[in-house]
Length: 300
Image (tube, rainbow, N blue to C red; front, side):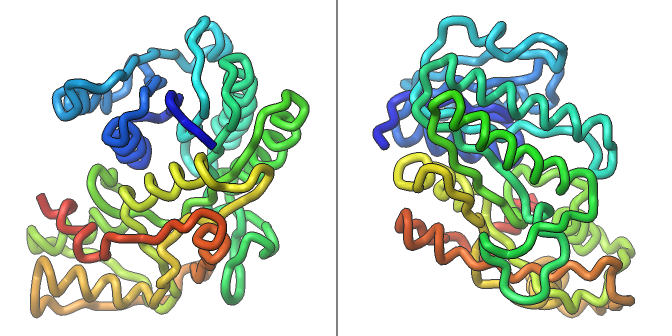
């Protein structure tokens, strides 16, 4: 699909900043939907300086009862990337609001004349899967976040079809790299390795799959341009391996020789072994950034 102008919600968050950067670098016009009180809004000025000739507009939308359409007005675009999501993983009320906001985004995309809506889901929609995770694997989420993402997936697909707009859903697994927020395993581990602090580890026996956010941005753009309407795609590296190997690679980079003490298996025991064959076959996308290159940014 030909794209000239894109809308991005959550445009300056962890994944959103990388997608917005990519779109600007590729010469697309961008409408960035931002929250007025977001701590990330300073990144808007960073992007303006980095891409001085780019066309980028900011729309500041409150999380209130008004539809996003009220803030967008008469703006038009070709594709709508919906990366905004908030609330704690098991906050039922917040997660229900996320579902409503997702559906509002689909309506806004149709209102803007977008040809395609790209929704962003999560590996949490699958829950615990034994073996390789494909897009046909069972979906049995065990937290409110995963259940809300899965609900938004199905409801947004039905609504998009009703409104006559193409729909694609990308399920992101685990990203690590520049702008990854604290409170997540890898940035917290890197910080403790650097400052010599103590940290607790599980057994780290489960498989994991880390993808650089810049590679994720490339995948989302590939889906917008070459993905198939009505399809769900896993977005991951695809070269999954035991989490212990990632932990020890981080140790070797930031604190060589540091002793690591592993604990018990986590509960539930979530092991991520995603297949990205569908994404690669349909779009030609390939990951390009290694795990070691990604986590260097966590140590800066």
